[in-house]
Image (cartoon, rainbow, N blue to C red; front, side):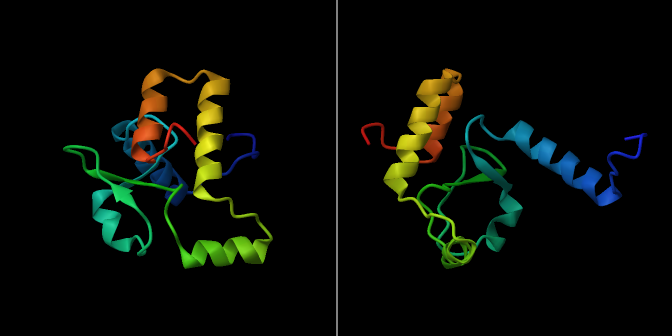
Length: 117
């Protein structure tokens, strides 16, 4: 910015402002948050939770199933781990990084992570 190293377009600024505003409303954690008004745009197969009295929805990216995502993973040669493996990875991350208690609790709760995986 100012030195020609980073160019910010007006739509980028709007997207960053909206993402920042959404992030302030969402619980802390390894969570994917969207506005409730965007809920109809979410394809079938994605598991959603709405925190109590909130205007956001959270996507359970561990347990959601999507034919499109599976197709993109296959086409890109990406491995598609099972939900149990992702749960173990998330719990391992929380343990290894000593994340804040609330961050860990929100991640486990909203992603429906089983603690004894």
